[in-house]
Every structure is written in C-alpha cells, then in structure tokens.
Amino acid sequence: MRTVTASTGAADAGESSTTDLTSRARIRNAALHQFATQGFAGTPLRAIAAEAGVAIGLIAHHFGSKDGLREAVESWIVDQFAAAITAADAAAPDSVADTAERDAAVAQMLEANPLIVDHLRRELLEGSADRTLINRLARLSLQSVDSMRSGGVASKDRSRVDQVVTVMIRQLGRLFLQPLVDQVVDSFPAEERPAAKPELTIAVRTPRD
Image 1 (tube, rainbow, N blue to C red):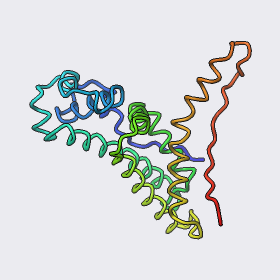
Image 2: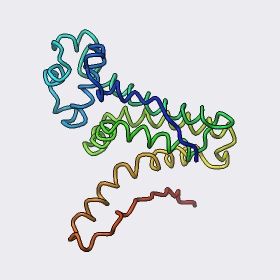
Image 3: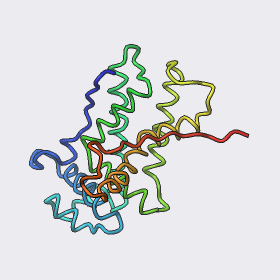
C-alpha cells in the first residue's frame, strides 16, 4: 500500500505557535480545543477568547455567534477529511484511490489531529439532536463512494446507503471503540495482559429479506 501524505492543516489546528496565525484561525482552533474537551454547551465564549488571546468581541466580529463559530469548526473538520481523500486520489495511479487507500489517508489525518477525534467522540456521546457534523461527513462519504463507483474501484451492485455506512463505520467505528478495548485490557493485572493489545475490527452487514 502506498503511503499518502496529506496536507491536513495540523499546524493550523494549533499544533504550532499561535503567533503566526490570524485571529480568526486562533479563535477557531481554540474553539475546537474547548468543544473537544468541554463540549459545546459547556464552553463559554470567554474561555475561547482567553485561549485564543483575543478580545471576546472578535468572536462576534468573525463568526457572528457561538453557533457560527461551531459551523466554522465543523467546516474545517470536514475540509480535513476531504483533503485526506484528495491526497489519496492524487497518489493513486488512475487518480481514484480505492477504499483501503482512502481509509489509510483518513487514519493518517486523524492521527495528526487528535482534537478532531476527541470532538467527534463527544459529538456522538453527548447525543445532541443537532448532528450537523455527522451529516456533513455522511454527505462527504457519499461523494467519495460515488467517485469510487464511477472510477471502477467500488461496486455498483451494492446500495449507496450500505456503502456509505460501511465507509463511516470503517473509518470512525474503530476510532470510538478501540479505547474501550484498551480500557478492558488495562483492567487486568499486568501479568495477564497480552504483549500487544487486541485491535478492533468492524464489519457491517445489512440483513436481507
């Protein structure tokens, strides 16, 4: 399998000095950190402003409201997924990466952006009725599936619903459940733990009538 290096924007997500970022980017990065660790409802705007090192009024200036700021954070996250897929396609011989290559590129992006992982976990666990981020990722996955179907690297016989669900579970399911596996293993005495922790694999099966 080819190694894909995607431009994930990790430095723009706050992993480098904030002095070389615009105030808008600093606010968005601080919001991602706060939302990922404290949750959207539990994050006051003053905490975001303090972390970003800006006046609180700049949040309204750049984003209009707290909801507008969440929209910017989610747009940036979706952009990172899209950039990973684009990078995988660019490295593919026929400019259409297969599922394994796209999954690897997305996994590489998520490893470089742990706050995205934390934010996605919190989005699911909090059970918010507003699942715009998951819905947007589902639409992106549908675009990805359609491009693979058109490029001949995904079956046209399966339903697109099945394929999108499979893509999202394959890319995100292990991400959310592997920590549970690790915690169960860590609960055992050290002498009983395996040398390597079990790795979770997930399969999706649609019942047929």
